[in-house]
Length: 194
Image 1 (tube, rainbow, N blue to C red):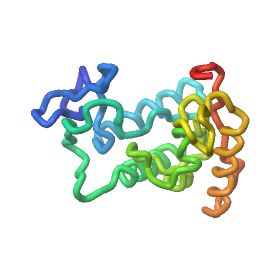
Image 2: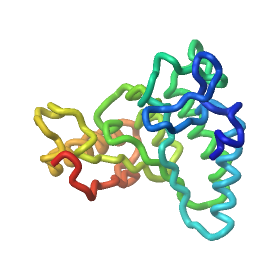
Image 3: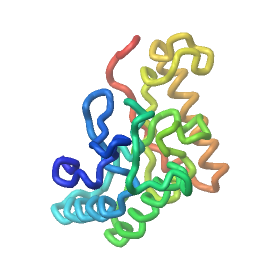
Image 4: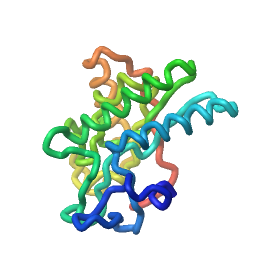
């Protein structure tokens, strides 16, 4: 919707057209600060009508499409990392929304619990955690690659995948001088791939 209204804020192709992923979905440039302000306005309006928590989902860079033909007008790729852009956004949300006095939470990909890189989407557990009251890793076994923790088909082993992922998350938050009570995993309720 926002790209239709403001294509100037969109992720672009190298020729300047609006970039779309494999599903034909367009994306807002995660470094577009004007969109950060828009997100804060929506969050404040949401609180004003009575919601008691602000949950942010799909806070990430695109990854599923022709990545060789992608360009960003707002993200300076030579200066900042994707993870730094998202961390700045998380900090901005905290600064702007903490005065509301309600919890803020963020959904992250499940593999952020066990991977230390940003998964090529900008999400790093330790860089998100300080800015939210709760972190919800989406530990869907169907979304883990074959051979993850030695399992040919992780989707067929939900307990093992979720236990491993959440154990890693607990250890990482303790090491980061935080608390595992911030963790609130999304649990898969469908049998994709199993």
